[in-house]
Image (cartoon, rainbow, N blue to C red; front, side, top):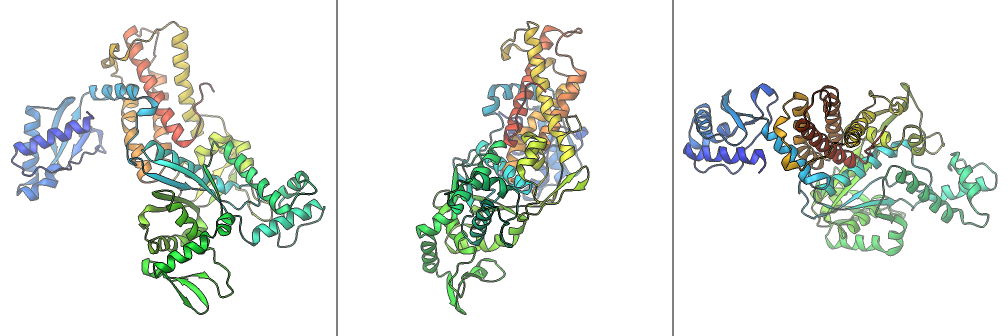
Length: 535
């Protein structure tokens, strides 16, 4: 039983003994901000006092008296604080139980909160136009979307990673014309695409190839290769054009009409999005008969809802105003808008030694994501893109990220894992034979560096759950940096063998090192970053 479950059970018994009826079904436990206040704290006396007609502090004192008489396992002291908080001080044995739990569950079983219960979630991310390479700004949404998918999978969801190919519209025609011009050795049209990549692609294109068809496949191949370098793979590549050709848009419009969600006015067809929180109704079909961008997007989301229980979209900052109308459209089709989550990723300012690196898409002056990966490496790129919440604008300094030193966060974390591998390798080379976990005396782990590692490991399941619920992979980054710091401190202060370290302590510390490795592997996998054995 988790230590928190033990404490909640003991508090429930104490409440019943104090005459509180009914005993609350939810008993809160928090980690005090100040370690001097204990390992866990509960406000249950304050939360229950009014309904029980009691003074909070007096009730809290009754609970403390009861708990002191029959303290739960691991509890060394119970005290009342402030207006009625019940604080628990625990012995080191509870952290030793954490170590055993980590090693017993392993990478596959530890920190796997079942939040999804098998629900199918479709995570759509990147979704760039197939007319040029992915640029550095796409990297943030790509790494974020993939990490969101990894978190969902670890937390019990069934996940489909999807890429929406924006292959309909005038931009594809301009791209084909630009590619054909480059093939002829000419400059692209003034309103076409000017990027240097077109020269290279045109040289690859066979003389008899259709520039539109060949260029489309070439761009998608570029996107797949770039994402593959980041260990990002999509299960579905969904073509917007194929949806138009299939009649799905007409079906979607018919469905909206059946729900009385559209009307005709001023020669156009409108969607009643104001009925569901949008600031104004939106046009679906313009007066000239052309579709707006919203119309195929509605059909696409309607299609995704036919294939998954929940949808998660990762969009760029320029789509912020698009969110309420899409949620309104799904509501009008009878879907729960809460089942559609849309994350907006803010801009990335690419820097080099503190100086801005200019990016401009169509002119060709953009920085390709391939170039970022080649310069800093895929692990450093992913880790950096995920270091902070996507709600905030990000500064990505290429020179800083490329450094190979302890001041570089990804190097710092990966080096912690490499150190673990080195410890395990050297002890094996020294002939140390591991014993079964139940034969290891974990009570020997009392050094503050050892306990710091265990406290961090104990927080990983909660961190994973919060990161999944809040859509916040940056919390995993934060945890990995804290765990790495604890490991480096342990490595500096606690020898695993030699220098008077007993054989029993060596076994205990090897178990601790192995548990730390489990935690780091879980975190790095959630971030899509490798766990190197040597550096």
